[in-house]
Image 1 (cartoon, one colour):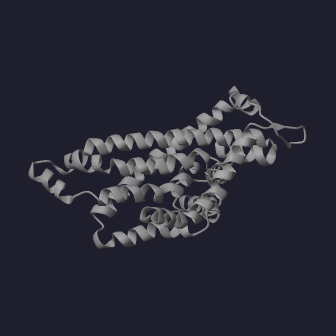
Image 2 (tube, rainbow, N blue to C red):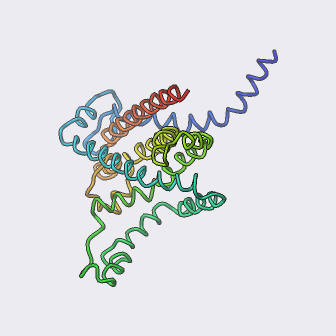
Image 3 (spheres, rainbow, N blue to C red):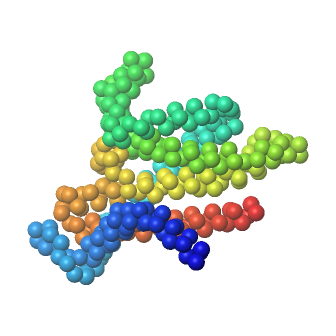
Amino acid sequence: MRNRRQNVITLLLLAPSLVMAILLLAIPLLVVIAYSFAGRDSYGGVVTGFTLESYVELFQPAYLPIFVNSLKIAAMSTAVCVLIGYPIAYFIAFRAGKHSGLLLALLLIPFWIDFMIRMSSWMVLMGRNGTINGALTGAGIIDEPIRMIGTYPAVMVGMLYAFLPTTVLPIYAALSGINRRLLEAADDLGAGPVEAFWRVTFPLSLPGVMAAMLFVFVPAMGVYAIPVLLGGGKSIILGNLIVQLFLDFRNIPLGAAVSVVMLVLSSVIIVFYMRMLRRLEEAHA
């Protein structure tokens, strides 16, 4: 009787979250999946039924470069964010001392501003008549403004700016949880700072690094605004393709099929991450 009452209380406490998850996650997901198997009439409307035409069209050679480009941009963004974010997280965890909280706050404060406003500010900074070109021209480094917007490096800058906090925070959490006595033991055994880092610090921080990679790679595959605003729409990735198919070409079934494929890819990556994390935990145990 007591266990039944506890189960009822637990169910009542979880009921609001379950209802919200069903309404805002499960039902829209099922609708998108259903649309991906539907047909399309000549006016862009959805024809109910079951067909694999959208998936057959999606796996044509014309769409293969978009998938490759999406994975390429996501992988490059992940690598850049980890390479820059790890030293920042290391400094905050081991060198900042009592100022670590302040540095974390400073890292997060810019992200209280709307995302589109922040990306638009980068357009101003990197424009032909923007702040960066003005500073370089004024310093005599360049003779005339150079084109930054609409280039691959501009997209990478936007990706780094957008995903740097989601890279630093999990790595910082992993680094701050390392027992400092292990580093003292490594020093007592004659290991130098570099050797202690590679043998102790970095292996123990790998769960945080893997979490950071997951938090960057998965959303970077479907990001839309950054390639459009900073890349000039030249780097078409899955996020751009979905928007174009839904709004410009009015091909809802094909857009839904792209969304489902991206969801499957994300799920595979998450499963791979969970297995690797479990292996790391077993190795450390």
